[in-house]
Length: 270
Ligand SMILES: Nc1ncnc2c1ncn2[C@@H]1O[C@H](COP(=O)(O)OP(=O)(O)O)[C@@H](O)[C@H]1O
Ligand SMILES: [Mg+2]
Image 1 (cartoon, helix red, strand yellow):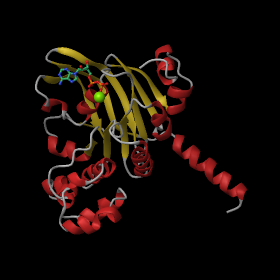
Image 2 (cartoon, helix red, strand yellow):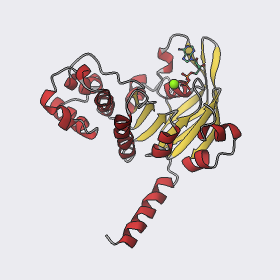
Image 3 (cartoon, helix red, strand yellow):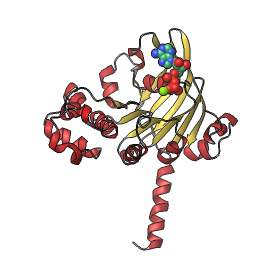
Image 4 (cartoon, helix red, strand yellow):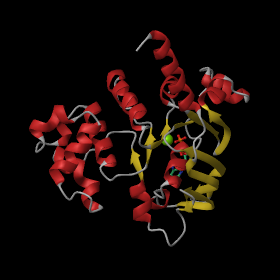
């Protein structure tokens, strides 16, 4: 490719990354409480297909609560309750009693803050959710597909039967991501997925996030501003359970209108 063609190609790729996409997941006026105390207040946010949306905001502002409300895991926490609002997945309210919660949680996968491999083999970890949902018809091929997808296959293929707990932190987190992908979700929620990892392992996960956005819609909670700049297409900024700003990464992070958002993204608070 000539350098002119290469720069045109790069410009087209950049424009494609910023073009609006239909929202695949939407929070509409969501409110939630723990033991009667409101911690999410009238949150409306749209998550576009094949985009990485970063949820930003100071500790305790409700980022994890919003994620839990999106895939109906909030109701698994004693005392926690969604008090108002809807979550639309491809236009359908996931809180509609006719929608099975198992289906919602399969469609909207999660990657937790700390790697959470189960005390079992690497293979059994990779297949855990897929088996539960009846998706591992050819277990060996299924596991390989998703271990390859997260770049772990070459590191573990000769020891699939050994304990997942012996893997490094970064490998464990990629195994957890493989376990999530193996359930074949369309959306992946990530709650500070790199906060327990060293910079190198974080970089591997960040590269994976960008790659996976071609196929999946990703919502990532991060308090790492530099990470949000690297991986996000769009941002939602929260404070005290409310959305303070939402838009493209540039709108929210490079040209913030709200002084609190400005202070946060320039590292002056948080
Ligand atoms: N299980 C819980 N029981 C009671 N309060 C909670 C629980 N989880 C979170 N909270 C409170 O809800 C608020 C939002 O928490 P969280 O969503 O975890 O914030 P963030 O992820 O932005 O740090 C905080 O004030 C937190 O203390
Ligand atoms: Mg949190």
